[in-house]
Figure: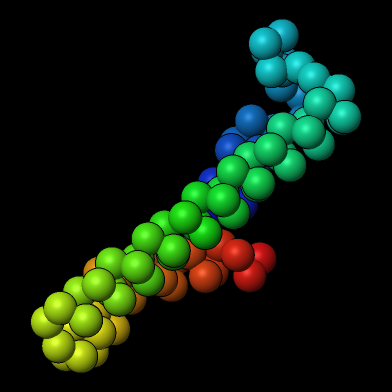
Length: 90
């Protein structure tokens, strides 16, 4: 989704637009910025996944194995799992 939004903004602005001085940076700085953001996103996804697995393990051991089945069938959790896995695969 970010790629689509960035492409749309690029098409809207065009090639002749002036870049604000605050956003002007070298290619090394841009590479560093993208690498930092990507690393932070991967770390966040890993922490969220780990916390989800731990909470499911605790819930299923306290209640019943049906908790896991209901979690897997839940539309919201399916959407979150889809979004996080789609982000890692690209």
